[in-house]
Length: 305
Image: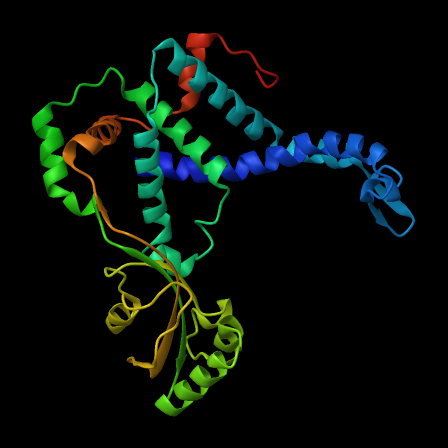
């Protein structure tokens, strides 16, 4: 998936969540009439009580609409436009392509330095992620459907960027780093006696990045330059939920916990040909594409015209 579109997906997820808040307020109000113990019922129709003053549901909804309404509505229109034009031009996304794009997306945001700096970025609703990536693929197909890229260019790109499609095994890990082997053995003993790994990481680990988050390192692979290479020798011998013996590192001694793993995968040219075509076509575009350019084909009218 093109990086511009990928960023757009993330922004769209955020804006969609904001929109859900606005649309959910009425449903919450209706539900409050049926459930006597509902918080909104306890607040007599308000969403908050501050001293003797209340904040009404209407005030809350109006402010949300004023601040975010235009952006949310535009995103909703964009999605409808893309869906209808995809049907009109007989553009579909196969299950295989969608699964592949999701995996490549998760690799992009779930491995490497980004996962270390933002370990929660890949935690999002699976159904929503699937819908947004499908939308992004359909949008890419629509804006590049008339662009012609010859086969030689596509194969050249694949050959020069094979590392993007030769996916290494991924490991979701946590770590505890202490200064001496003796300290590491004491931590190991506490783990074996039932102590929480994340709690010990917060209390004992000297790693300033992973320690405060309970030792979480996110998803990593052998190309992750912030992970001790020696960890991978130990990780490959572990079962999910197991931790290693103390491993000597540059900063002391580490204990690594394996939460989960994903096997490697290699995509052949024919499997990613359509994705490469879209990527090269978008790269050739002179300007950044705005989905609003598609509205004319469907004669869209909206409140903010």
